[in-house]
Length: 342
Image 1 (cartoon, rainbow, N blue to C red):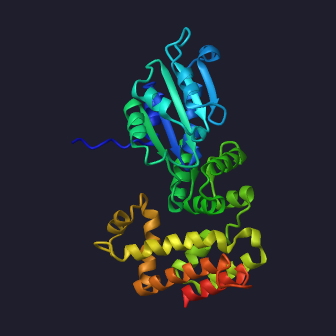
Image 2 (image 1 turned 90 degrees about the vertical axis):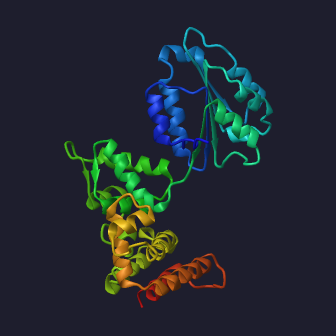
Image 3 (image 1 turned 135 degrees about the vertical axis):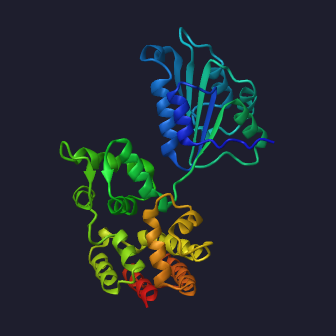
């Protein structure tokens, strides 16, 4: 039996740019960014401006039911090859029987785009899912893992002909987080702020435009911990204690947990002395990130890393009020960093 081809955002966009349209696009998942990019592209490019007046319909799942969506999808286009029907908030359509019947025999002249945000299709609706896959494209838009955000930033800016060093990318990723809509909006602002003829984003630019200190930030704290630089790590957490807006325990716990979790996995790489082997073992696209794990394996034992992960879980629980009546976040951060480095 042939393996089912994985549906990816890049693959969908390539087909759309080549005007290879499917009758149905069912876009679901927790990351709204990719859902919006696909549906917006179809809305802007499938039809000419003159064709849109009569052949493009926007519906909202909170205002229509499945039968009304199907009625719109079964219309024929007027003086155009296609009509486009985009259903936003499709997750609000509860009774889907009429849609399933439509998916089993969709109109070839209709491009139906279902935008199902903030979650996935109910996995128990197997026949419904199967009908969508047979009709066209079923795409799950997933949140990016935190450690992949710097690479996303580098790739996103490269498409805009703008370069950025990895430190700057990590500063932005750590400060903004994994909300890709907000992240790309901030990147656009930074790009616009660049002087004419300058196409490089540096830590100084990030500090000036986003407000992240180039010397005291999550990237530098992690770097100090990886290298067991006690003085620098204490400098940074003291700075955070005096400048809470610059950084907090809540933003750094996931960053450190992800690093030490991957560091523990790195100890079991087939050849942990080889950067290439460790990169493949951890699924890292860039060798830039491997050096932190190679350094970490020199500076920490596997047992110490296991204990650190346990401490991270303990501090996380305390930060949420469990077994912690009154210790402030700043003191918890100092406790955690002391435990890691000693």
